[in-house]
Length: 252
Length: 252
DNA sequence: GTCTATATGGAGATAGAC
DNA sequence: GTCTATCTCCATATAGAC
Image (cartoon, rainbow over all chains, first blue to last red; front, side, top):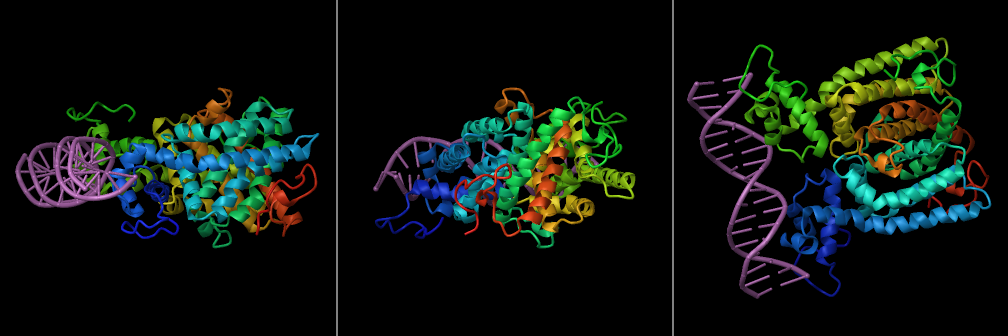
């Protein structure tokens, strides 16, 4: 995509390889309308290469989709792991603050989506869709990101040693949902807020998400400690934590 | 879907109308692979009706998609609004607890996804995809849900009168991201947790999400109050809130 | 590694009979 | 309201020349 030398024709010294051009174009287009919303012809036309090269280089459309997904995951995950380990070292002999753990998880992503260029931007929009897809999520997210996630969850558990593991898993799910919706940059918050917030403003997300999530984790652990057995917020009575009955009960 | 009387042929007294059968089948299939991942032929075959009826009843495939989306939104939103007003009344003369506001927003959805039957389950999986789609999100979510969201945000602002509006909008975005990923039920948390948590267990989500989100809102308001001007968690020094430098800074 | 040409099947939509 | 038949176009994939 960036700096491409105009279609086919001049194969001078430094022309981008067809395989890369296909990956770049596919990334942009898949991010826009998903796997089924783009044809390989659209991709190869945008890339300025021949249709048949998708089969040659990747095997088929599905393999191309996986290759797009894998390419940048490989670059991201080592950096995120390194940042996590750095955070751990600096906190020794104690455990790191939750905010720092969450930040090590999200910052490398937010930073690249904000300032890494259009390829990264598309990539994260694609992740938003895949993460929420019953078809692709269990395949691609699991394969390319869950090893890293397991490491993060292990460190979160160190930081919350009293906390039931289930609270951590649910807290992580809420985190990844909030994060990936951010990547979709649908502009919905722009309209809702009358322009006060912009979905492209990832620095604002960076400034807030780790605080939000860390507080959420702490609340889950607190809840598990004090009200195990209680089914849901709607069934409580005290003010400030919750007030009155708010409607139907959860269980039953 | 439920109780359908087997294909075409016996048009006895109470056969489900073709229009409904199409909506039901489309809901299931769109939820699985998205708008482009299903053909109208697959839909009408699953519905046991003729292909041409999609054009006749809806105009075309895109209009069918919107109709699927609209059908249940119309049922949900009045109930959510009523629950919100009930929560407000019961809290008078004060403002409701954040947990109760969030719960009024999420409970009618979680409850139906958990116990409303397969149609509702598919519907929410579809919402998860639409909410994270740069193509459909800005159109469908905005049209069918944002009027309701604006009302919720107004009540949240009443409950957090000192808080900058931007914090509320970002807090809402994180909420809707966490909620809709839950609806996708990708089974990722099952694998990650080794079976300790199940993505189909929406009662566990109901027991946790409002606490998590309410704590997150409070943390955002606190952050805005105490550290406006600070760019991000990575740049702080105190322990427990955050510790040390964790890596690159956010802004600049 | 890249391109031409083609095989084979499916897409969405509609005119018009019933 | 529903179905038959068909129009037109596009999909993915591959065989084989260069």
